[in-house]
Image 1 (cartoon, rainbow, N blue to C red):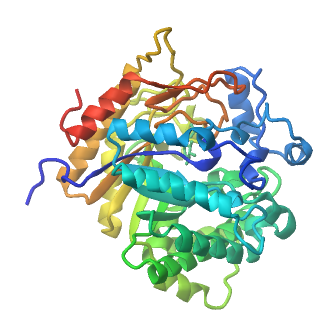
Image 2 (image 1 turned 45 degrees about the horizontal axis):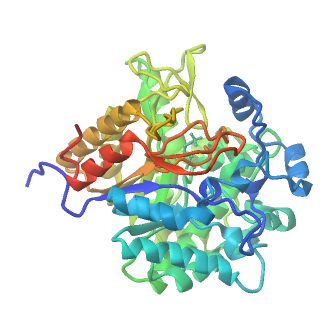
Length: 488
Ligand code: BG6
């Protein structure tokens, strides 16, 4: 029967990640993670930050300095938004908002500080248990990302990180520990954030130094190790936690041909295959798709499969798919097409779309298209794991933040989400990214804010750290309580 709106059990959510929110980098027994090493000079202006992010997001020299540098000022992920100390109060705010689903990640180096420790860190487990129990006590379900860009740095230095198959074993042991210790307080498991990140953000995705180690050969071999790790963890989840859904995620780049020229359409098809479908095809269909053979041949890439890998992938596919969605992009064979900054990548400009303060092309209709495309292709339940507008805000002297622009963004996307529901897409949840302000992932600044809750910290970590409800907080509260009917 034709739907007219959201099902009663639709999950209205919000998402953050450990490295961007938690802080407390040396507390509670936590070890150093790869995200603790990323550097920002708070004196840089917007253009300098963007240049750094696009031209040299992470260098070996930066890594070597960070490994011996204990100052906290210039390493934003070491302090996050101080969620580690404030999560109890924050969860009260989430409950007041009416949130139904909370997505965060576990910090691997809080559970296994070195990655290869003989025993897990009980204090780290207790921290997440308390966080998730508090959510449940307030009727909020938990969507847990097992790995969101931060691995224990020791695994990188000692074993080579995702270059090595040994990391697969450490990762599976880490996931097993989470299933044993937190299996009862997590509702949805997501082994990897944005599986395609290895390709567009090598340090974040697969811990390779951009421009130095990220040849196609290295990236795809690391990604293969992650595919194997993913399949092993899906298998483990199905064995240990029957009935608990375990899913896959990509950063979804909705792709349009620039013109109706066949060449542009072919380019769009291939960009979509290489940037998006490859990852979901492996996770949901259980095999490397045929089109990648030709791609690997063209770029002389030889992915080493160990015995049993193909079978493992085939037999352990995901229960649901999810994706982050911020913007769409344009494919063309034409050289010199105008560019715009995108989500971690530079994109071709679409003349029909407005751009955000950070140059992202806002495209709500692309969300409806994406949902339809993914559901048509896989027929699996879908969750929007991230969506939102990153922009600067002004905290007024009376503690208010008037963010109509963010409300407009969210409204237009939720309207298209509702259209997709009526189209018949089985989409079960929607999570606003960074619904409490966090350190941004690409630029590493606080001033690129996504939150419905303002956090009083600046790019240098200065401020009270206090939380303030933005206008969008009340707007989302009404959206949730009306189950998406009241978007005014
Ligand atoms: C996604 C990541 O790529 O985009 C998040 O999963 C990230 O970690 C989000 O924060 C928005 O990107 P940014 O760079 O604006 O924070």
